[in-house]
Length: 468
Image 1 (tube, helix red, strand yellow):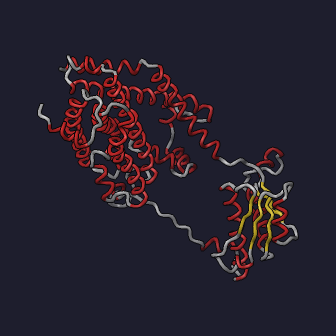
Image 2 (cartoon, rainbow, N blue to C red):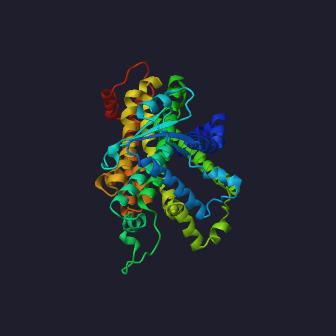
Image 3 (cartoon, rainbow, N blue to C red):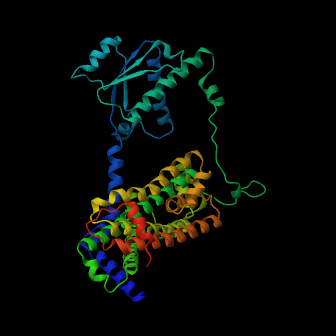
């Protein structure tokens, strides 16, 4: 039996890895993913250009205050030596991106001006009189082309700061005095396990929400792999069934051996592709890093001092620090375990579906119940991370075998899970895989030789109860 199953595994593996499509996707995959995300970033980023903003100011003082703030900000940048006023090239970088214009015109005239085909203005900002005395009142911006987020944020900031300065002046408080009492207190979440009895940190841990979304990335990979290679198992079964190849194979090999050989063989294909992607990604990072002014060699990383690391963390708002402090060994090893467990569990169901139908168009009624748990696990986990990261939903979803492959990785990345919980989750996943394999094998055994009959859930339950 082992020898026949091994032959089927070998056949499934070699048949797929030798395909040109597999080789192309494996070699080009990292480049395609990198290019895809780079394209999203580049296309979504707003262009650095100046915008002419026409202001209609019913308050008579707000627009003047906005212009004063722009000049103040520019002087501060020059004083801080971020820019050199004597350097013509650097002068170009001092662009405020927003040029304020205050012509002596009323609102209706300004509307007509903006509507002109040859109008030099990009936006019209209207400041009503009540905007100073009522904080819940809003200014209005009219546009030909919708403003990008940074531009809208800059205009909003200028309005609010100008209003703030006017109110401070009215009550006789200087801006420096206000800044000294203005409260902007943050809240750092620190796990109690991360401090000793004296309250001193004993190790650096990743910030849990950022770490959770890093784990979420691993969960998406597992979701994609399970769906992709599970569908390959199903399509392979349907193809052999419709071509009647299975009738020849089944004369010398048991249905269970065929099913397990196909599942394991395709699983090895997935692991091979994933490992090659890791290697290629590492090579890409090593090649590209020098062009970005970074040294990613092991020697450089090991030589990095604690001071350098803290500077890097500060410059990148803690994101790089979070990535360095993630439990990478636990994450990668857990990824492999949950990928294999989740794939084996779901692929046995995919194989059973493939055996029960005659064509891929007939699979929809059976695929939806199989796909829902994984998708539900991802969405609920993402929501729970923001609302209740250590609540009952996260715990039970990490234990239920149909959702644990995509949820447990998030909990591990946050370091909010005990070892016994991980071991229990894996044990339940393995036991469920054995159960679904048994069910899938019984459906596969009967369905693989069924032709020309529309299968229902009732019919499949009958197959399960058939005696061997």
